[in-house]
Image 1 (cartoon, rainbow, N blue to C red):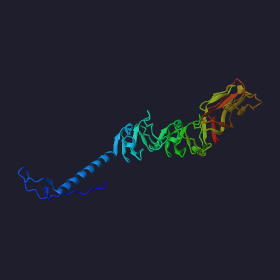
Image 2 (image 1 turned 60 degrees about the vertical axis):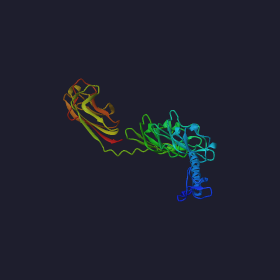
Image 3 (image 1 turned 180 degrees about the vertical axis):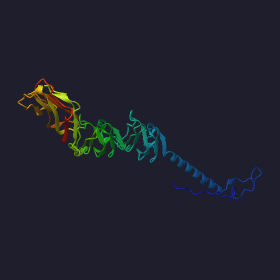
Length: 379
């Protein structure tokens, strides 16, 4: 509506005139008796002022009909509302609709509420409500937009278990959204198009039992798994697990030595020699050397004194009476050595043992000059 020009009152004109247009010289009961009328210029001024007042009242009435508010259920029939009018639904977070050609069209605003119970509007349509926004008012905060047929989640990132992610309908998430799997070391997936794709993170667990996830596919390529002791690393290739554990550095040779701590009187059954014992710290192959200091007494003439390694009877150190065919009456002492190649597990304990083949004498192996040595060779 165009603005009306400002009215200026004809302040120099007489307010009243006689019927013939001449000025009124006197008023009241003692006047000249002629009919009195409003002067023309003032009459036209009041007429124009009244018209502007009426026009303004109509404009205000029209303006009052352009913006209204109330509950969703009280929104007026758009057929009886001004085209272009706005309606604010205050029971739905003050979202704003506009009457566009006889249809209330959502144009702005966000409603807030809960998902349990679900307070999202259930009466939205396929066209007029497109873009309607809903945000939860409790933690964790989540955001949704009405697509015309379904609610699409626009929350930037969600978290939950792997099973919870799979239970969701992926079409109801906006592309680019992230999901953090809380039961798999907080690994992160992203919705790319119509699929979830692994993008970052490392899961931890054990190999025995094997806690690496099953059911992975090409969209899980790059998924990383690390053992809880930090010694093994794996990466999913898209079809299988690839072991990324770095090769162990070569180990230096390890030499171990233990001397017997006391002598041992021999019997015909193998016995551990006191102190001649080693704990092998590494798994692998060892070269073991045994040194035995035997004393063969005359009462054991004809007997053989035997030294062995942890019950290994394939190779032994032996001292026999070689004097006069076993009829000597003198004592014989000698140092005898033997070697073994032995494969051990880490932490295994090995011993030197000794016994005699026969006799009732006191033949022995001495504590001094008796020892065991082990040299680690290879894994």
